[in-house]
Each structure stands twice: as C-alpha cells, then as structure tokens.
Image 1 (tube, rainbow, N blue to C red):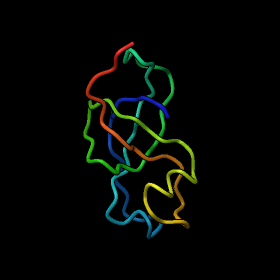
Image 2 (cartoon, rainbow, N blue to C red):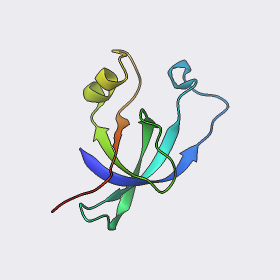
Image 3 (cartoon, helix red, strand yellow):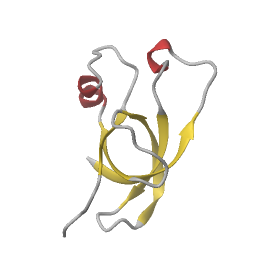
Length: 88
C-alpha cells in the first residue's frame, strides 16, 4: 500500500473499454507524515476521491483487479481509501 495525495484527474476520449465510466486520478506519492515525494502514479478511483485528498493506493495488478472485481482488467493501481488521519 502507498499513501498519496490526489493532484489531478485524467480525461480521455479514446481508451480501453474497461475505463469507460471510471475516474483516473493523478496521485503524488507521500510519506506517512504527508510530505510530498518526487514520484506520482495514475490510479483508478474506487472510493470517490477528489483533488487534494490524501488517499491509500493499492499498486499491484492482481489486487487491483480483485478490488475492481474484473479478472481481466488492464489495471495496476487503484485508490482504495481516503485517509482521515495518520498516527505515527
């Protein structure tokens, strides 16, 4: 699992049919304290996250397909939660 912050959304007119009706979010990776890293990823939103929200990301293809309930989905990363608070 990876923590991150949603920094944008991707819009496309031509894509794989699996992505029809799904939101693709740009997520900046963060450390557990919320400090931004230098890396990002693109993830399917399964929880209704929006820009600026801290999120929990599953970055593993088989697990992402299980969350999305599609064994053949062309996906690697999925947002699985919105973070309310982190205690260290």
